[in-house]
Image (tube, rainbow, N blue to C red):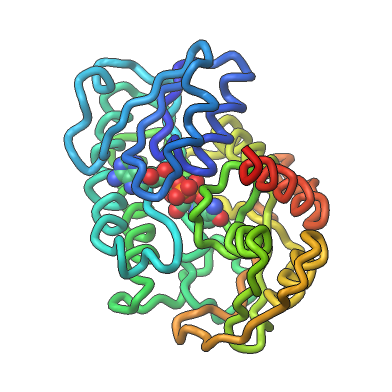
Length: 314
Ligand SMILES: NC(=O)c1ccc[n+]([C@@H]2O[C@H](COP(=O)([O-])OP(=O)(O)OC[C@H]3O[C@@H](n4cnc5c(N)ncnc54)[C@H](O)[C@@H]3O)[C@@H](O)[C@H]2O)c1
């Protein structure tokens, strides 16, 4: 198949591209490098069947992309990272809105099947746990997190409009925290941040008492989930994709300190007022498609550490 990936130079995009190429597909990848590490794409650039174009999807798409009839489109592009909620706020909002519109138009023109990567952030600060796909969330439309949370909510609405109005075979996946190899060196999400600090012998910042709970999905399980939803998921449907084992940030930090042998310890910092206390996906719907997570947190952290160590050495 001929497949387009937006946000293809990012953490998930690179892992997804590598997997699709191994399956024998042709992959075209678009990215403007706004939150990715430019060096990481070099691992794929010479692979047969792989094409990369530096493109900002907010702008009209280039001709060499528009003229291709893609069978599948994985629409991943979006700036990520909590510090970027204020630094790249308009880029988040515009990529989710104008960028998503451009990609939906392309999919509509060619009758491509499309998967949009939304986020558990659309649930905001949830008042129920676990969160099912029917839960409508608790989001502040003018809060600090709104460019991402509301951006993703608006993009979901747009995807659903294209499904209802044009019968676009589109699926939405709400991803919960995911980690693994190919996270950018400067990625500020908690697992790469903790590992990078440990590899530099630095202490780990703990927001408040560290009792916030999160679930973490290893990248290989996530990629399997994306492929499953793309091929077997219902058109117009929404699927949570994550892990149901939760861990406090305190315990996560302890695990990473032990794994890396870092003795610098923890450093308590103020907790941002918009930090959510808990996130927990209800995975009933996606498990009906035959998917479930298989990599434990200990195994996934070990694999991520080995990869990051190699990056630091080379
Ligand atoms: N990794 C997670 O835990 C997680 C959780 C929830 C949702 N998601 C979603 O999954 C998708 C991929 O996330 P990721 O973890 O790989 O993050 P990432 O930041 O590594 O990748 C996103 C990519 O999109 C690119 N991008 C951003 N705006 C763009 C634009 N206007 N035009 C072209 N490219 C653009 C970035 O440069 C980056 O390479 C994102 O939509 C993200 O919101 C990820």
